[in-house]
Image (cartoon, rainbow, N blue to C red; front, side):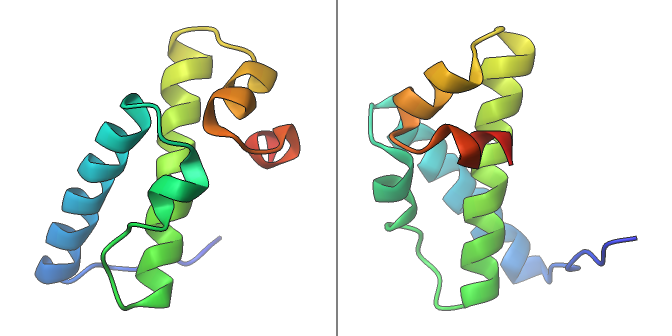
Length: 86
């Protein structure tokens, strides 16, 4: 069973704030990696969690809720299809 990071109250605030900002950037047409470069945290672990989670959220919304193909999602985000599939 994978271990999950338990966020402190401050980390939870950072996570929520940055996920919200990322969603707005992506909805505005920014590519995923460009949007993720703007994540505001000095903690590399927190950065990776946020970057991984935003991709999972977008896949859930676009593929599972809207039926968009992985290829189309990858194109919209400016990333490789393999990254979406993984």
